[in-house]
Length: 85
View 1 (spheres, rainbow, N blue to C red):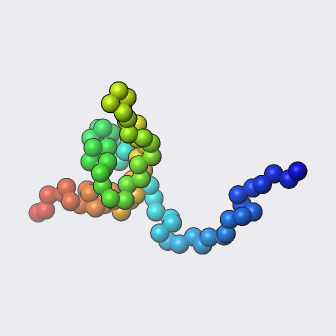
View 2 (view 1 turned 60 degrees about the vertical axis):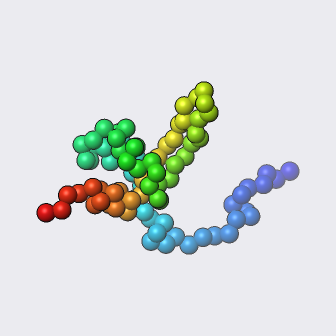
View 3 (view 1 turned 120 degrees about the vertical axis):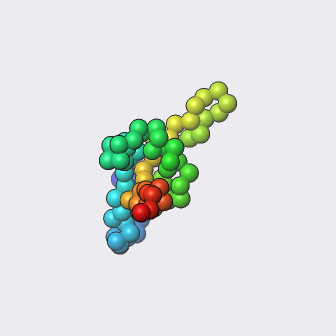
């Protein structure tokens, strides 16, 4: 019996410029702007466009999330926080 593969049933997709967005971890951003990773997580957790993987906890367990932050969101948030001259 031949195993079923998802590739046989899926359609081919075209890669566009939007598909090549660079994603950063909170640790990578923290290192570049010299902040603590926890501070970066707090800044980006509720921003539009941030990919949040994981689950919210219950009343007895904590929540675990993995964040991936697109470069355009990093630029937007850091631009908003920059003091104008």
